[in-house]
Image (cartoon, rainbow over all chains, first blue to last red; front, side):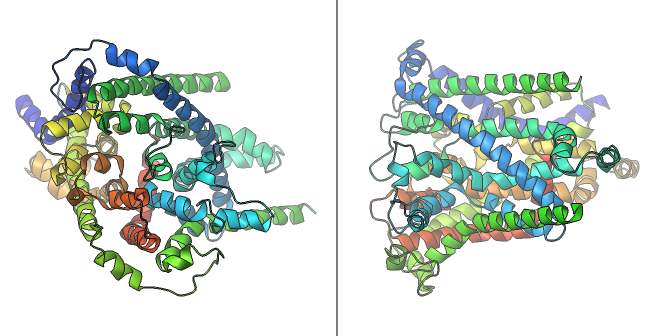
Length: 300
Length: 277
């Protein structure tokens, strides 16, 4: 009987587990192996390079610069998305009529791809010529046209990059917050009202936000992990027929060009992927710990 | 006095929501507006909110343009999205059920092995995965685009959590009637679990249709391009035919908007289920 159950377990779980092992664990291990070799244009290299690839990556200004780009991007996108999606959720939640309508409108961009969104941003809203929407609006207030994507000083291109992601993702996180709001026990609000707490800021600060703590932790974690993986909008907004500008390369864009660009340097690319995976793991685990620690401090 | 304040606050909130909603809708409007305009209208130095004329012919022009394999890329995307969705649903739901319901000594170890892959974000493994897929000779094939994406630890996790909370009585009755695990699963569990299949299915479908990095890496020949790669190649090419580009983007978004509007409440349910709990 026990034998038969084990058999059925593997009938159900086996195909999935085998595929996951083949397409996640095998590539990872292979990549770790490759990262110690000189692997230009080949997946079966012969020249052992030791830690050379790792040293090259860590000493490469372009790679460390890409980490800096990520840090700047995260510093923009995490708080802004958090605040916008939380505010949207609070407002939509309190609307009486047309709640479903507003929820749909804010969530609708989630059906769009980064490629399509980047297209609208790059070719229509922020296209840098006078007839673009952003410059037209600027013109109404007497401003001069701005070449949004190629202006690095001041760095106007950040406005374009951040707003694309904000538009695409705010609705998704709003839904998470809405779900969190639904779970708050109405009794808490009634008790607050009896205690004479004025609706608005006080209730928000002392009841709503603490009750949303678990959701907030999840949202911040997701936002940071997703920021680390930024690729699509950077690639589609900033590259053109002339190539990709050296400023504003997040880690994945850099890896893409290292591993699959002209040199096809898979050894170097693998070393970069391993370093990045380690950084992400450390950041994720560290952050989860830190946020949970913060919770016990606040509650107890 | 207080009443008036509350009412004013409510009105203010509504106005703010309406303004934000308009801002969120403008990009969709621009997409359609440009897709149905002439090239001259899009680049006209005098920006107009409404196009001067609606050019439905843009759609035909797009599909007639021999320099862009757009119809082919649409077909590729459709095949990939459907195959990925069906494959993921079958594989991940079976695994989730096995993990949740079939007692086995090492089930926990297997579960943690699966969960651990969530720590390694998919995007970081594109270099290693490319190495594997190219050594299999699968670059620029539909196989290479579909098969490696079929094993979603996230989907498996969602199914497992769902089945853990699934009422047991029906399955017990089926077992008493002599149905084994296999038939109980297909005849009793799957029909009863339709909401979670719909939620995971729509999320996987949207993700597969919109994914960009993996198709860009693997679809190196034009014959293996997906819609997203084809669109992206428009924006980075020297000669851009703007009206074609925008109408192509509209065509690429339409199927998703349909899926989205039909299944919205399932996506919302699925979105709520992911991330938290």
